[in-house]
Length: 402
Ligand SMILES: Cc1ncc(COP(=O)(O)O)c(C=O)c1O
Image (cartoon, protein in one colour):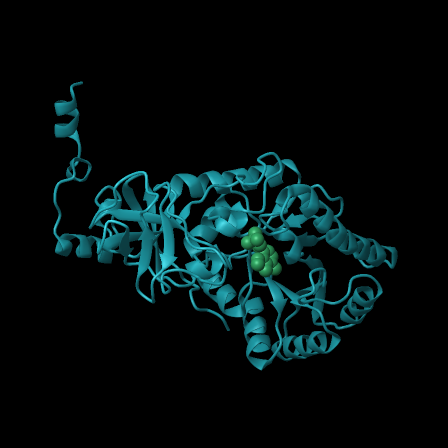
């Protein structure tokens, strides 16, 4: 077929037919965008996710864990999006982790079950909502690291005539949790005496290990930390307390923790999107750069000022990125170009070492330093495939910090 024939048979969008902003606005509002909207039409700054990459990341993680015989419960704190949680379930996940009760409520309302709250429900507002959530979704598991909190949860569950499934949260990362070994066993013994709690197993997230640079060092760190959780599991079983579930792990340690006997479930989050911080931890077989998963998440921006030939200004500044890391977003499609924050609304692209021209109106895609808090800055995520927009996803649990 000649090039002319191909072009005449293609829909207007592929031929680059001009489109008014009003037309784009209507499409964006309708949400019915598949085959009708191009990346080039999008207003910026926009949070975009490349579907081919997202799907590849999900398939890779799900099939790896399946081959290892481990359950897969991805952490929704990364994506906060019911559509993505459902895609994970379709790929074989047993449910979703949530960091906050508000996140879990939103996911539950959108039809996501198998929820694991990875932090403790302390305080009236959390406890009452936990009982309410458990009434709707009895398979929800709540993490506990303190005997008073166990007792408070038990009292609230008794008043409601419910039973809560609870996990003991272990401190293997100097954050939340009770000390593994005897202290944890003691807490579980207390928990099993509380008639409105049902002991589900162990929650053990070794966050410090996730970002250890170098695979061998990371392996050593994670094996030591998760080893303490496995030992706690053995101690419980020795006492006759059934403990057939132990959840933990991350994007950085999925291929370590899923090889540890006694760890039954992995709860990674960032692997769906990836970010610069994760790229820098080093891979098992890929040297300095961690490439197990692709950078599907980017901020799309527009060049809207070119004051000199040495730099341009784009419309994505401090408000478009999470700025908690000591490194800047990266415009990887523009070799030699360096991004710098230039205020709340502006980013500066240094062109002095650029290998191609960058001009007013050009679109730029930037890989983000840290995906989780970056997602939380946006209301919507635009799902693209190649140059086409396929869907607009609401970031349902955005801002659900309580
Ligand atoms: C308790 C818990 N589990 C799992 C994860 C997932 O880690 P990652 O996003 O590094 O895969 C996190 C992330 O902070 C977490 O807090």
